Amino acid sequence: MTEHTKTDGLPGRDGLPQVLEKARPRNERMNSEKIECNACPVLCQISDGRSGACDRYANHGGTLVRVDPVLLLRRTLSGSEPQLVSFAGREAAAQPAPQGGAAAAPPAAPAWSGDLLLADEVFVTGVGSSTTYPDYKPAPFIVSSKAAGVDLVTVVTEGIFSYCSFKVKIDTDRFLGAEQANVRCKGEVVGHVTTAEYGSQMLSLGGVHHLTGGSKKEGRVTVEMMQALGNKQAVEFTIDGGSQILIQAGRAPVVNGVEEKRMRVGCGSATVGIFAKQLFGKLDEVVVVDDHITGVLTEHQAGRCLDMPPSGIKMRGRKSTPGRYFQVANPGVGWGGTDIADPLSIIETWDASVAWPGLRLLMTSTTGEHASWYVLDEALNPVEQEMPPEVRRIVERIGENCEPSLSTVLFLGGAGGSLRAGVTENPVLLTRAIKDALVNVTCGGAPAYVWPGGGITVMADVMRMPDNSFGTVPTPAIVAPIEFSMKLDDYRALGGHMDHVRTLEHALHRGAWHNEGAPTALAWAALPAANPWPLARPPLLG
Image 1 (spheres, rainbow, N blue to C red):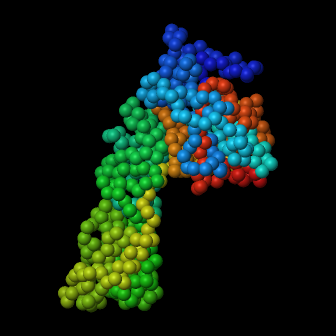
Image 2: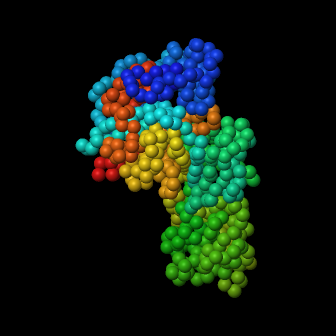
Image 3: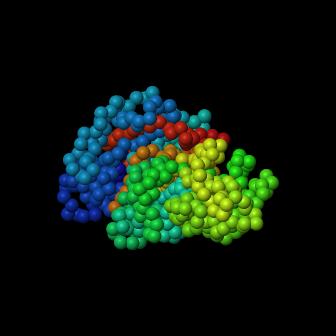
């Protein structure tokens, strides 16, 4: 996508402020064969056939071009692979080599066809759309369309985010690291372990303090890590005092070289309650080992409701309520997320006046991955034996009820001045309109959750965003797509840049307003099945 530049004019835009049309290069002695890119504050001076420091913009025959195509979503596009086409049948822009070498020819692409122009079928995403730096410039695409008879407008841009992070949910009982422990990538601190959630360990990665508040190396490693993680690539981390972990969005985490398989069905107490009735009559005692709450069936309310007699078992740890024990062991990568390899180590003793020889004991983890069967001998010592098939089937059912272990990566970004100024001259009106649910916010067409409170803080699952949605600039900061969709009347009411509203057909023919007609390309992709259509969300059509 063609980006604005201080060496380009704005063709066909008579009457726009002169400052928008042209500004002197930062370096008055700059070589005349170079052009200056102002897509971010770095202001790269780029020679013909080479790209800038971010590898997103390049000098193509004296014109600054966006290397990647603008991505458009269409509801009914057949096939799963994006289809690269050119605007109005023109040749797509040359693609510079990533390292800034000679420009390469673009992939072969069919000419654009007008039969794709169904207003309620096409959505312009921010992927490849360019940015709004300097801040006062309107967004590159302000596109009007009509859906279900309602006039809509979508304001599209690539935001430059310094205030952004990834919240990573890792489905595992394994101990990854203590809360607040540093998370490192290539030796640099890039985040920390945060509060664990039910069956999952949570990490906070990136953020403004790691991007700009530390050393240059810390900032560089952080932004590279964030780009890779957001683009669904695998990234390796180490946690101080904890584990080594390989994370990739949508894939199982690999902890200390072992791929995780299952997320626990529940804590030890919950597992006892869920399966108590199925286990009843097949054994005399069950202990479900868990680093949070270890469950003991005969003491548990579930066992009492089934009139199970007490077994006389005496557990280590701190008793919470009947049949529920905290801190039976330290967190770790063993049974149930504890540091134990021998489950009998959490049993202190047996009450000889209650327990009996032949007592049948099942010990299992919350995922069923670890399970052992014991029978007490004459001295009330547990002796491991082969597990009966009917008990084995229930242990397998515990595993069946555990969802596959997964790494979930959520992008969290604060949409500040550049984004809002690209929408309206009075940015607070956009913020208020979003909080009043008049504006639908998406990231690459994917639904975004807008946090309550001040500002525009959005969160989106990267697996629901298009591939390669994230880029970087060497300030350092993350570049991510964001779109604001609303009724045309609401856009007018919040003081939007109405002079830059163009029809979808015009936008697809001419490209971004700030450099219409320059070499540019777009790609079509099908709307992911998990995503709602961005222009169909109430109250847009309500």
